[in-house]
Length: 109
Image (cartoon, helix red, strand yellow):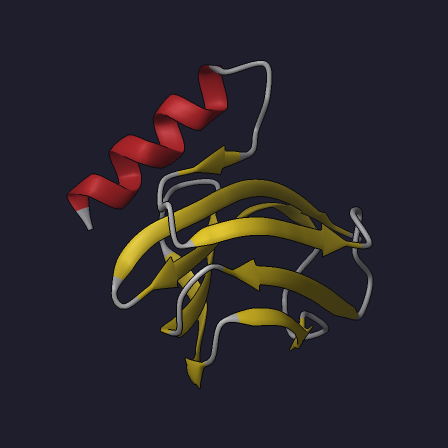
């Protein structure tokens, strides 16, 4: 949890709120942002991996978590329901095989 909070705090200070930390992830896009209901995550993997998706509030508390299971090398779409979250600022974190791969800022309307 401490590493996640440190990462979120460092992202808060950067001009760009997207961060890639895993060479197995060759492309990723999360839309729409701002999001009202469902968030679509498109990813491109250079290797097969177990994919995890988490959403953190502005204080670093994990508010949602979803294990997508093993995905083979290639392109994938993940439909992530966000309707249960209150409006505000959040951080989306995608992990590959349990290792942080991507983090970006989201706005929930």
